[in-house]
Image (cartoon, rainbow, N blue to C red; front, top):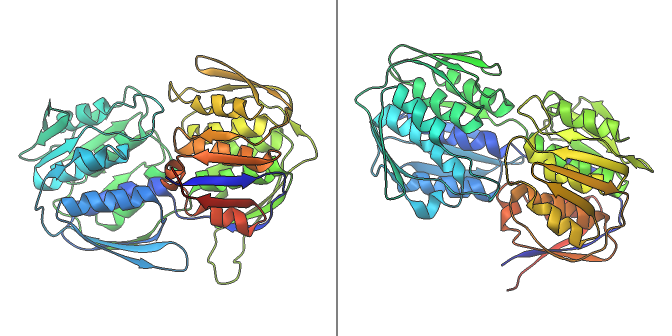
Length: 431
């Protein structure tokens, strides 16, 4: 099992190119199930979750090919027919986003058998809203032996209001509604950039979707969709992680190929903590870029409270990385997690490195500035892995992070990118 060995105390300097957004690529790959024509996606990140979904779609009988490009992969998907409506537990347990095939399968083929999902250990994250919405669209849903059985003779448009905001729920129902008869209105919908990017892809395929990026999404069903070509948006969480890496090491990093409007909440909180961020919009070399953000760590970081919220608020996927940063800030900061009920597992590992963190339910109080020292640590989930990498970069001595397969799920070759900007980090194999 691979581990990361990090020797800390080195300020990061240079430029990092951000990969395509994993959380946009996954639903957009699933959207290819809605047509029998080819869908070509560019800027697909080379991460484990993408490989998992490709394997799942091959189980369904979908043809796909991958071509390496200068920036990410080119993935072509063609779902001419459905050979097997089963999404097995062995694959779905590795990644809860696998449930995104459910809506497209029911909408186009009329039936699906999908295992209840797995993924990171950060809370229950139930799929009941997906199922409730599909039932309201006219599907028949049964759960037996750990599998979701869904059938439909034809979905029909409806008005559906989410009890709580759900990103994957919004994406699943939006995809299903594209082929439903009539009009569907999704209320209290997720507004994340990844939802907007999915809607852009679907509209290129011939869907009629309005309002993506707001709390109300209106979908007028069409009889069929066609193939298209689309480029994945930049990964805002990877970009934000590297901004924090510059800050926690007292370095200066330029983060290229980013969309600053997706990072407003994170940049605002980093500025409050004393981090300087400059923006330049221009191409760099042969890399086509939206913008470059340059972050410079201050001599002294200031403590700043944060509460996670749905977009456009501070993302829950940056909470662990921000906690690592606050261990090096002057004063006490309060971190409140409102999205998931079990997302402070990394606090115990940070404490092993010298952090002073008190967790009480959904609130964590971080007392800084505490010197961090290298230690053996264990990653519990994707973003917790990133927080331990950041802490290791700032710590004195060597940090060994086990279970880095978690970070491979969502960060493309993070150790290589960090090495190029001055980090001393390497991947090691062992039991």
